[in-house]
Length: 489
Ligand code: GLN
Image: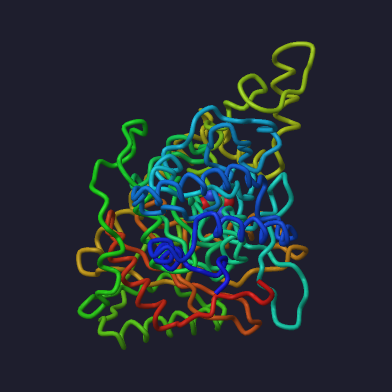
């Protein structure tokens, strides 16, 4: 098997047996990255750094050290994580030339576990988007094509570069972040696995902030086992992030194969609509059947406030974003457009540095937080958010996990995106409630659409119960037996 085709678990075992070196893994990936630049998966490739880290890893292993969870494993990092001395852009023009002198906690944890960095992956600007089309660096491209249709498709967003790197065999795994679906939706569009952990499971320190009460980092991989391995390496309490939870990180891999026998899986009726594409409905039914065949009981549940989740999200997220993005003013980071006085310099820098979608969010966010509208919009959205969290808390009294579709459709062509911003926002229908409630959610590839494009199912779990989510995900993965290989990659 070519080294770029291995799963993280397979590579780990071959490394342990001395049958492959980290150097060999890294060299194979650097070759693949060079010959697949059409995917635009990476904003910055860091081959020298990767080779040096691989050499160190092999040296550690030769000395009998180096037993980290990701020892010698080459990974890609979403370009929203600050990486010391390496360009960090957040997919924006306004961070031009920004090289942080600090390293995010999540990446620090991964390097401590022996991982090797291949580069920084493309994303929607400041992680705002569901398509990668808002990246200042041009969109990442999905390695998957529809049958008999040669048009390039989006890998989803915002972690689209990470998704296309993992699906296109340009990394064994990648980090993503998920504020309203940015790990799970691109995973669904590219036939990969992505888990958004419980809010507080992974430190947000050193990750460029979008909406701080919703943002969470998580792994994107080609198997559920790999997601379990990588999540363990990324997670952990961090005193530098006051919202980081001081809870133990379990060995997520250990319970993976325990199966779903005896579990109760909730099927929320509010996720079903007449407008749902028949093939999405069919996939969902198939998922229910797979879990039942493996001994789980499925029950219909109600999450009555579901329909308010999307509007509430598109108030809360822009509100927090407008505040978080006020720091980009031409003084502290990146781009500066000179002007005669300080105020004009701020204005010119922000006008030139932010793209349309980011400006739209700043405008909406500023509006909903303004004195006359705060109660009507922001406060109301916060109340709705509480109700949504209560809906979940209520059903988790009697179910172990929830199964839903991941996305309302498969990946669309780059040149035929949803016609307006609101239609784009509707792509997040199934994913945003999970962020509003702070719960873990995972997307697992479950099959192909009629046109031959990947489709995923979503598993939602109780707070800090990623173990159950992964177990259910593993059961779906086994039943689906998905061939996660886009043609030509
Ligand atoms: N697509 C959603 C948005 O545009 C979610 C993005 C994310 O999770 N970062 O806000």
